[in-house]
Image (tube, rainbow, N blue to C red; front, side):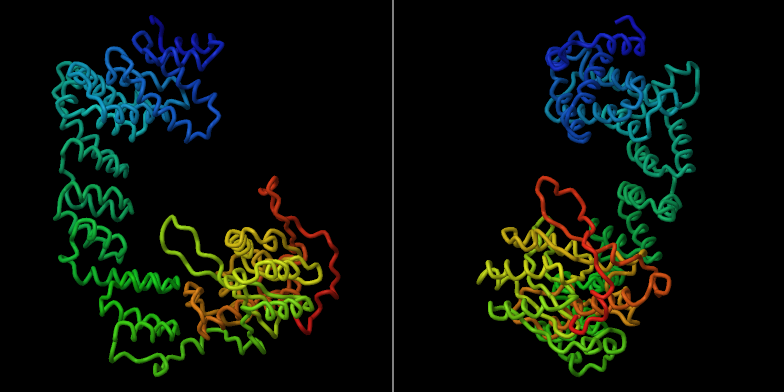
Length: 578
């Protein structure tokens, strides 16, 4: 074009066509006479004027560039893209992103077409020079663009030698010496992934074993694994040993599994599996832990031990019976007082009755009782779904209760048998202005309820709801942690992820469910009876957090508003049936 690239961009920017779309369509249909700077300018305008989100626009433009590279760019698609990479820095903030775009588009183009020998050789020569410019700092690209440029244009040691010779006539520095010095600088600067990528690309192996240890110590595990994989089995074994010595069992197991090294580290492999089971047990994912054990007797016995330690007696019996684990103590015979010493029980809260509700008569009786309460606790449970990408299971039960009586509603059965009655009864409770409803992270529960039973109106609106977790200024470790801080003892959450769709529920499941609702009332009493400055935990004024919500499709993004109804102190003064 006869213009400096920066001048060219400026000229084109001040002479925009009346129709950008028509201009782009015309230019992109035949690139024979379109220079890289004009091409990039049009690409930039497409990005600026696009109506999609940034990621979508990037993907769309990448696809477009991949297609138009077949439309005769001069002197060839590979060389054309190298010229684009040389020009892109003058586009300022767009340069970095567009460099990734054109490189990925060219890589995609190569999957369906091959450049001519002449185009490939010339582009490789130019790419080697660009690499030296990036290393020297005269072209401001990040290290990732540099590495991708080497890879997509297949720049080898010979090309770097030629580029050095052309740049520094008479220089005795070889490509290998230059690269070793540069890679050493990267290692000193702890740019490990770039260093590993260059070592791998140019097939160097000079850093030695200490390099692997350095990356692990610096917690650049991705680079360490990439390097060990490139170096081979012996380096992978060293990496596993490094992980094992630091008790990084998850990383060690992943490397062993990916590279089939389990038989070389049997003890470490078993230790990793035990650690994985323990993590799952601590998250109450007992079913997943059982699946992960894969019938291995030693692992199953360890899982039984974990269940005993957690006080999950029915899981102990279930595993012993299912896998014939003879010689292990049954739950009823186990001398484990862990639960009795460490966790809150329903009896501690003086709850008189837990009522299972799965019929219409029971539902109406429960509704009548709850409407007479000034304060009730709410919670719900559903069976966990461990398959990625699958919808969560329906909410199975809902617990609603006062301080003396807890009702556990079988939502699945009540919905199937009498959905209209269920809708009416729950609407009366949830939308009552005279009853304060207490929940813990109940926004999550109500969302799950609405997803499970979308045709019911009762879960689209609620009034007078107080989410207890919002009353405390600092996180307390979930409901169990909050209970421990307020009441001095926590909740046993081992059954949180149990099968809530099984019928009948076990006695332990019923107690777990009832306890979650009942304890909310006792925590609320503490908040109500202790002013914020006197509380053992720093709280805010609880009345300001009573909220109401009505589902509105047009304004669904709005947060629930604080309830405007005035509430007197006497309304919630030490209720006798709350």
